Image 1 (cartoon, rainbow, N blue to C red):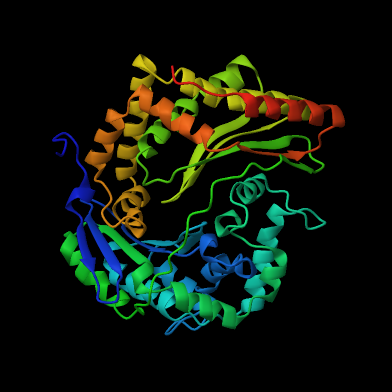
Image 2 (spheres, rainbow, N blue to C red):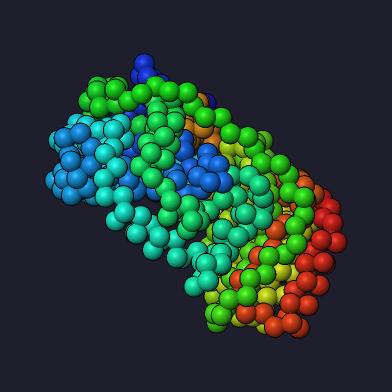
Length: 442
């Protein structure tokens, strides 16, 4: 049942399935001064074979390089910016996202432009865009071409021999050889109606918004959506230590988790907020106020429909690395032994509610809830249902969810920076202690 005090515009969203499989969602946003248009495509690193790693990201760049009626990247960009903001896009491990914020009276034009860009890109100026992507890829490697990005290293170790473990940007040798034919083939396989969700929000009736934008996406090809498999459970790999000359060490301790559609998802959400959601949270208090361990530290839960990664990380001086791994593992052990209760649990629930309701006030958050969530869940829960589920999570459920994560296999440990032999020895000892530590529900 809906909360009568909750104003959730997504509950009144209009949904339309086009004959080619495109899903359209429109939300009436009263008093909005701008309109927003988003498209989510089911394509990313997990849809790529090793020789294709980075192709989805390159394709995201290349779709803007001209299309029917707009014969160059300059023409696409100039048209978009006459309507509102520049066209924006990003690629993740399982999604490519496009968005355009425009003047309300230009919404139909914006939909037409984005539909053309996605339907039949020209793939012009490949070499210029390749050079830009190669520059972007330098963020992940050193001058010898070694991978030194802790995020990419940890995911490769967590999901070895599975596309989810591949870098989104891709390896240099792949980027250097991708051709227009490669782009066309990947585009034909994935930029299809069956793998696309379109969201629109503006100050107009939802059904009228659907009528306005539908024509732009009706001519996309239907196709058959690619089905991917979940990665196997981790088998326990050695720590990943990469020697790299820098003043601090980038450290990660990462556990494999269930996905965002799992029954433990709400408990894992509250577990992550217990550790890191403001300066009063456990990780910030322990690493900052009590230990003075690091200036930059975090806990996050990266989730996909069928799996996820629970990460504790910090950037800190080399001598503190062993302490980090001891303390990071201890934080999760403590969540099992002493999950949040009473006032702490009330604060964590409030923070979860605050974040969810705050998303409704932002255009991008509103469409993420109403539209983007449907890319991998045909009938996602309403905001009211999500709030009710979060309120129903008990301390025992949080403890059991974290215990299940810890029992599923040892975490992946990554440290990128300069570590002396004595520090390496202390770090390995800390990780041995983490492997031997067995949580118990209080």
